[in-house]
Amino acid sequence: MGAGASTAVSAGTKGATNEAVEAALTGVGVEGMTKIRTALDNIQEKAKPTVWISSSGLPSDELKAAFVATVLRKRGVFEDEDATMPLAELVKKYKATLETCKQVHIMDALYFRDWATIKKWRDEIAMFFWDDEIVRDCGFLRENVTTVCLNMKPWLFVDPGQPGMWDAQSPKTEVTKEEQDNYMAKLEQCRAAYALLKKDPPEMPTNCASGLSVADELCEVSQALNKKYKKQMVSWVQKVIAGSDVVTGQGGDVVNLNMTWQCNQRVAQALIRSVRSGATMYAAHSAGAMTMAKSMEMTQEISEGWLETFAVSKKYLMSAGTEGGAMFDANDLDGQGVSASVLGALPMFESPFAMRPHFKEAWIAEVLEKNKLAEQECELETGKDISDDLVKDSSKGVQAALNLLNIVGQNAENQDNPVFLPLLDGQVIVGEFRQGKEFFSVIGKPTGKAPDTRG
Image (cartoon, rainbow, N blue to C red; front, side):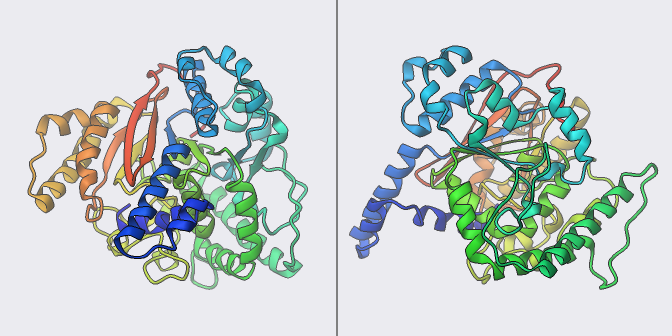
């Protein structure tokens, strides 16, 4: 995400509650900086900061076993000789540890869908949900899983919960009824706009009486509440997000999920810091993964009216000079390469990429054209030649695309055009942070038919 992402995450590592870091921070000059780097490297080596970027979740036992092993490695209990152990045996051997692992599952990608239908999908096991799958097959206990919708501000609003969508919320809060009602009214404006765009044929929503879009009105109120009740938000993030072994993101409506992160940028920033410091792991599929990318736009997948209605204006995005740190820098917001309207609002990585989950052969030509733009920009700015064959292959398979990303990513601070990663169902991109650098690999086998993700 350019330097903006780096700014957003660097403070997170510095904020890690580790005595070695605190001791190192008392040093000065070269010796002090050496101590800091050594301490941070030791933290990251032990914690193994990891992100899973999936197209279809965990559609195979092999991927589930790899996921369980990753969580156990983070806990420091996994034995390397168990790397090929089948899922059932792995869960049985590490039962005691897995039953203490905590998960937070974020459902906002489906917030504007019909909640009764989503509950039905869960009951019938007709769709992939991380919180169901991990409890059912990976040894986690349901009482250690917290399902949330950030749109419902679980740090602020008391709520009985919505089956299949979010758990009951009982924060200690001073928010007034008027404040909550005003916020919920803005959220309902978004639901009404969503319903119009879902009609056949779609109807275009109009701006509010204020002249603002429904997204901008929601963002103004949301950011004001988060600022006013910052203490409650920070306390919830520290206890729930940073206190979990893994945070997972549901697939669904990518533009709406991106709006949620835009309206709650402090929470997004805290999650990024928690992941990159090694405190928790993040795993998401489809829309939940796309919002981490430089661009969350899919080729021909965002129809007319959606960005105009649900993309928050860039004046509300945390940029350089924002109190508390930037999420996006001038390079991100200059409109070159990637429009601010499609900037991923959970910028977990500095490497400039965009995802194509559920990849189809019909997209090859368009993805190739996008990656040619990334190649040309990188060559122009760095003076280094990139193999045309590598660029050609990058539109057909994720491994070749990752090889291209490893080259283009060296120009991340200045790169506007992202590398598009063609990710097939059944595959997972594993992103790791080691000693300040980002490493990507792919695991899993492409599947002809993956579990239904409804987006």
